Length: 403
Image (cartoon, rainbow, N blue to C red):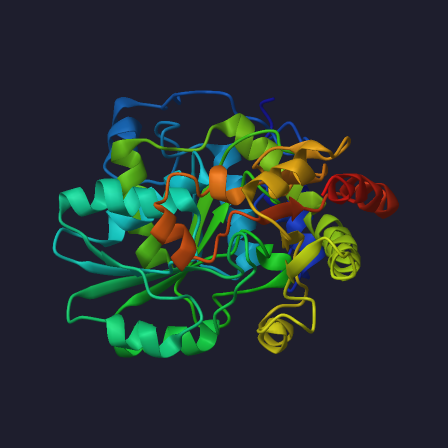
């Protein structure tokens, strides 16, 4: 097409738009072709109008695409949509959730800095710090997630960053984000919150005082277990550091995965509400089963942080964990005797999944580290999907009947 693009007629006016509208339309800039759906730009490089144009873009003097390692229109649309949903100035996409954590820490921390990481985080996050970041001179300590006094006491003059998952995986433990943000800022540190389990549908960490939000887009943002991706969001100043790292190191999100995530965001709210409704009912049912010793779900009044969850979240999520009466062998029998639920460690899928955290997602931790994080051998984690709730219950009943 040769006619001039009239952006005001092709793009949506989203001034003052609500969450549902932003989830469907934010970030999209239509090309002169006038496509309704988001375009997929599968290109590694871009053509410049002149040598001077190329030089200006490479120097950052002129906006525009340079190379898809760090500028791609489809990825940009995804980043801008996430930023809109989280209330962030800017978001930066990465190749995976772990890639997002890597990019954030490498961008914002230096050798000699001290980082506090909740002991209740994904096992690979602990491995990343213990096996790799410490090797390059980063100091790391692991305070208990909910103990605010422990966080304050663990701070040092060189503490740069707090990192938490709230709710945590797999025990649905929470921290008072607003209170922890006050502690971090008083100590001159930043607070980063992994919002993977809640998504911006259920929780807004930046609005509660956090500086950075992290997502494994692989989970609920995609929603169908199709591809890997991650994203970091926060102020433009902080995110420019992350962009610089991605530009140089290259753990960037592919355009195709970004396009799939955009499709996932369109249904994020309706999926999360359905996940939450089924998870709540399943957790209540599990509490009544004689083979179950304890259920971990913040939507239950029996959860020690139920009131905090009601205060800082608008829903309780889709992950329900429970301890069976027995040992590792008993937990494995429950898992192996299900017939429908998928035995896999991924979560956020339309399909319900079941896993044994102590031997999978947290299997590389020492027994002492697992015990410190509350990961027992009898623990089973269920990520509730979108199947008929009666079918999910029936399948877990088969598993529990094996005990």
